[in-house]
Amino acid sequence: MRVVLGLGNVGSRYAGTRHNVGFRVVELLAERERVRWQELPGPERLAYTAEVELAGQPVALLKARTLMNRSGRAAAAALDRYRCPVEELLVVFDDADLILGRVRVRQGGGAGGHNGLRSLMDVLRSPDFGRVKLGVKGQGREESDLADYVLRPFEAEERAVVDPMIELGAEAVDAVLAHGLEAAMNAFNGRSAAPAS
Image 1 (tube, rainbow, N blue to C red):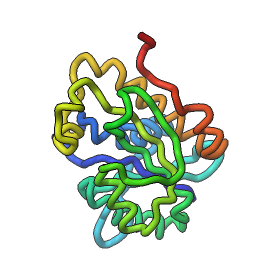
Image 2 (cartoon, rainbow, N blue to C red):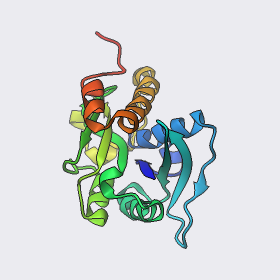
Image 3 (cartoon, rainbow, N blue to C red):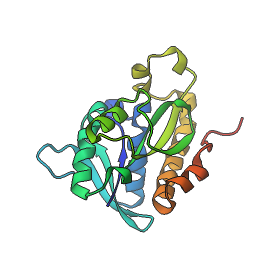
Image 4 (cartoon, rainbow, N blue to C red):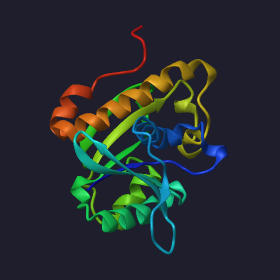
């Protein structure tokens, strides 16, 4: 079974922040399929999971119950439970260096200062998982500390772009599952949910 992990932090204080767009994509996918989130079985209750069928295949959507910088433990538990190799894991997350509204698909790469990715790479001992990045870089990014910036909510004028970007991210996940990473990269890299200026 494929695992699609949306990165984010649990709790209402994080719900509208830039760091939680990964959660929002997997939540949208679960909502579309009308499935409920359950606790991932195990003594530590590390994640919430929603089992769905996407692109004709069984998929476990995942949200870690740990904080972002401990996401690796939840991912490892899910990969073990669903017998999913790390190369079949697809991670959806925010990218503060990518312009707000853009979506980018790729296989592997570095952590780029993202604590959730760093945790995944440390615990899974591999960078070789698929990625769907959602751009959250707005005008205040250059003057801000990265850790502070990603934990801020979107500005009022940015919010019109956020929901369409979440939709585009969900489409990208569907495309990866249906057609593979390379085809999804060709279809989505360079696309943006922001209106053309």
